[in-house]
Length: 164
Image (cartoon, rainbow, N blue to C red; front, side, top):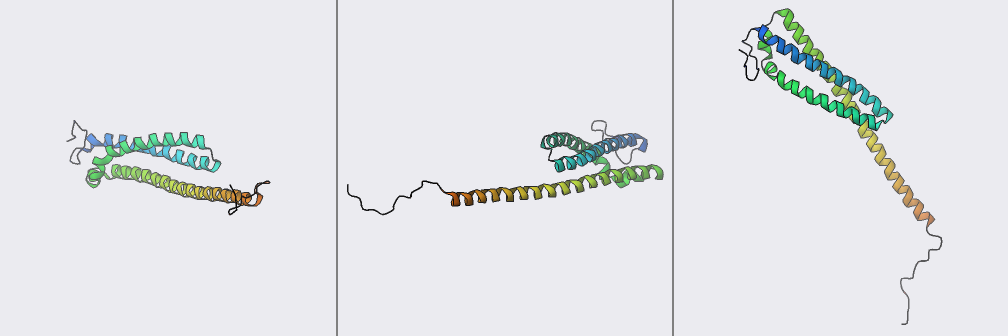
């Protein structure tokens, strides 16, 4: 019986009592991951163009979606903890539909993760390149200063005889 206070289904309940809830949760996950995937693609484009302001806005949108996806994942936990029992209570066609939806969502999450890893690697490479360029600028300035010197510079003698 579904826990009325916490809205937690049980695999022993009639499927008609929990399938609408599972469908709604998967709909939310599907929507969130689809939008996340779109933002992930845009993120890559913005990084390639070095559009920092747009990228920061996009990351804010993405964080909102990630927070929503985490909330939805928590709602899904009662089902995932007893997935085999829940799916075993369904007719084969309904079971295949749910399994297919979960697989599709998981595939999308895998694509997002792979793109994010690629983006992370690209950012590390860009950071290393920038660090090397900044170091070479500092070295170049030091070398130029050593060769140019001051025109009227006369070092003061270290050792001298002075009578006071």
